[in-house]
Amino acid sequence: MNDLSKRILLVAACALVDPDGRVLLAKRPEGKALAGLWEFPGGKVEVGETPENTLVRELQEELAIDTKVACLAPLTFASHTYEDFHLLMPLYVCRRFWGTPQAQEGQELKWVRPRDMRNYPMPPADAPLIPFLIDLL
Ligand SMILES: Nc1nc2c([nH]c(=O)n2[C@H]2C[C@H](O)[C@@H](COP(=O)(O)OP(=O)(O)OP(=O)(O)O)O2)c(=O)[nH]1
Image (cartoon, rainbow, N blue to C red; front, side, top):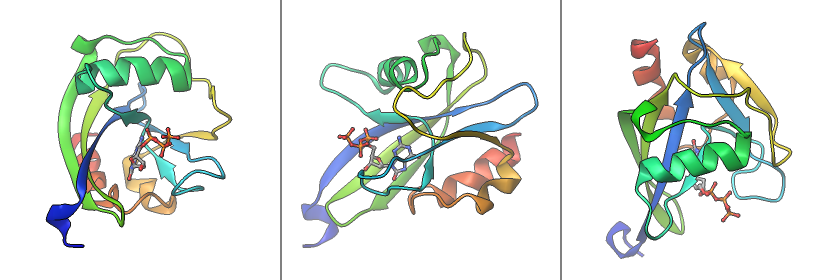
């Protein structure tokens, strides 16, 4: 199968930033694809959603925090071919949210400085995103 015959999966991801310039990573639970890897919170963009809507929903579902579309700033994106699909993943930055992130799905959470992210194994699509966060923060 060549790349062009794969479906494009649109996933919205968020770099939540704390006042110290650290970014929240979540460990993908056992049993899921890419289990054990550290990822940015987010998820698939559902029919009828904008990527920003998706993030407001996912941040509430996964972390029980509230934010607003206006608090999500686009930073960059990932474009990566996996075996079953091609991932297109816009990455947003969010510094303004309400509540303290608490894992709602048993995921381990960690606030990590971008320069330390190389110590946290991430999905292959995510590696090219790290330099953008290092530059920003
Ligand atoms: N949320 C998120 N997903 C990522 C990242 N990097 C990366 O390759 N992905 C991939 C993993 C999944 O294939 C897809 C996200 O899908 P998802 O989190 O909504 O769905 P999932 O695989 O957990 O499965 P499910 O909800 O359908 O059970 O994007 C990342 O940094 N954050």
